[in-house]
Image (cartoon, rainbow, N blue to C red; front, side, top):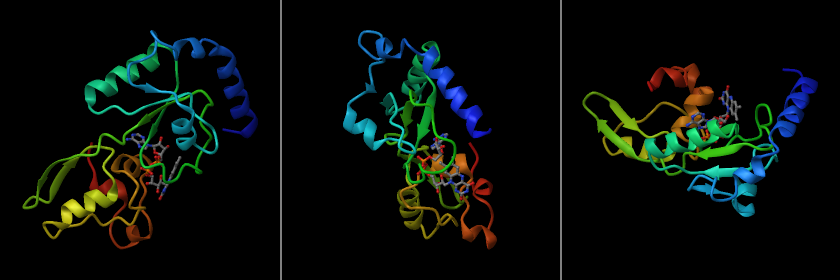
Amino acid sequence: MKKEQRADRFARHENNDSTLDKILKPPARAANVITDDATLEANHAQGIKPACLCAPANAAEIASVLRFAAENKIPVLPRGGGTAQGIGSPPPPDALVLSTKRLNTLIHHEPGDMVATAEAGMTLRDFQNALAQNGQWLPLDGDPNATLGGLIATDRSGPRALATERCATWFSA
Ligand SMILES: Cc1cc2nc3c(=O)[nH]c(=O)nc-3n(C[C@H](O)[C@H](O)[C@H](O)COP(=O)(O)OP(=O)(O)OC[C@H]3O[C@@H](n4cnc5c(N)ncnc54)[C@H](O)[C@@H]3O)c2cc1C
């Protein structure tokens, strides 16, 4: 998309969302929506501060956040480790950031099958450390603070992909 088209899209979006301020105030606000300035500043993308942030802890909470956003026509921006927020198109200024930081559990690891199941917010560092307990590792060389969800979303493969395979090869959702 061209720069002018993008600017136009965001301008239209801002004009249409005049109700956002009202929505973010109780009682319409979803229970786990965070709106304090310090948190929002820390979760900016390309210098653009989101309107609010949610950090759901399970699938039911994710569903409730997405329902809230859909009902109120609020754009959703998933966020993992936030290690590469300077890349890509800038987000709309009034987005709801859905942080995966509380979805950080290794659910299951079967070393004999070389299969592990983990939540999207688990960092690459924690995942590698868990696999290492059984002498295994994931052949990716991303930022250790990147999350599995962020790696999959961007198919972050890195130079090691030349010797092994692309990121997407190692995951199934
Ligand atoms: C728009 C974009 C494109 C990129 N493309 C590449 C690439 O082609 N090759 C490469 O090697 N590196 C790429 N990177 C760098 C890569 O994102 C980082 O190296 C790292 O893997 C990101 O992990 P993170 O947890 O820090 O994600 P973040 O920096 O938090 O997010 C990165 C992107 O993934 C999305 N995302 C994060 N978690 C989830 C999730 N659970 N579900 C859905 N979406 C999610 C975010 O909305 C954001 O667009 C890209 C980064 C961005 C922001």
